[in-house]
Image (cartoon, rainbow, N blue to C red):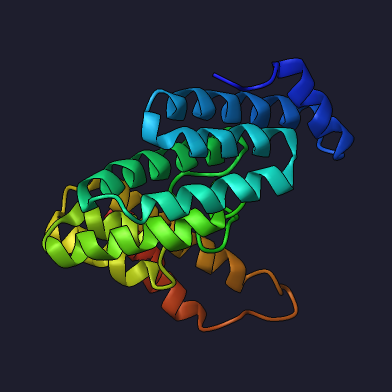
Length: 212
């Protein structure tokens, strides 16, 4: 494995102004993912992105991501799906390690771009998710993952729950999204409330149902 030493990577991040405790977490996370990806011969370019991203070498990271996306386009659906599932779970792990939640929408929280290369998400992951949903439209798991990366997270998660009422991650993610929306509606208080409070009371009851 070609990753640099942990101390060198942390020094790079500190020079970028990243707080020490976050530099430690992000460095460890990227090194862990680099090691995991390097075990798969066809993922070695992605391992290079993780190592470069940890050190803050943006030019090298972009080059590795571009090269990986170009190669992955020629893979079979099964190979792209296997990588995409690993990438989505790995992204969630890094998001939680850095203080977020794996159940948040990745269209608005930096999950795409910050924790995974945007070009890989756009060129490989999203088309693979769309193909998975098209090939297996009654698969709740496909709808769940599509929801986390979709602009219409509500509709995708609701469909996942419709297909599998016991899909706990979809239920928890939808509840979290509803609560975040309600929280945003209150950020102008006490001067005003965005939207209709009565509607949000109904939505709170929906959250209660989702979590019981």
